[in-house]
Image 1: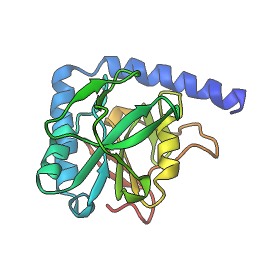
Image 2: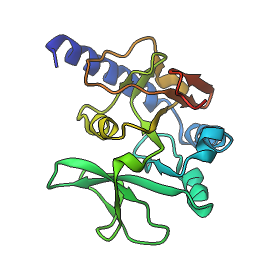
Image 3: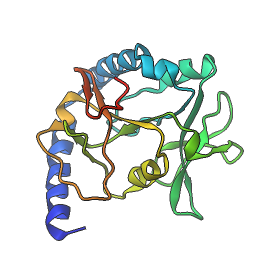
Length: 198
């Protein structure tokens, strides 16, 4: 990564984190509900048979209720779990009532008994981030973990999940940064590519 792009990303991370500090718990709860409603009424979400979601960390939108309802109707739902041996995240089937643990990066993850799924099986990946732009570029926390997962989930739709205040004019990016097919925010959908599913 060039020093110039790295510096631009860090500036944007600071700016967006400052905005996020102004988002109240009440607003997060209300606007998470609007995102969940958009997901649940989406035909592409309803048709997906294997979805990689996430368990919200910090100020991320909480989509877990809609994933639980998807599991109840037979959808295979996975979430990321850190694999220390690979130094990367795996897609692991979310337990309905099994063991959850706190992973090394602070996120809730399925326990060791949960089944690892092949990335090729995924139909849809819900991707949190710090910032997005309307070209589908995404700014993460700076470790590249989601980009590496997305690079392996070649058949899956990639939907960025965020707050309206996280959508910016332009996210600095390089060739290895993975783009989204669509953005889902409380304010609506942004279809980015022809395969967005929106």
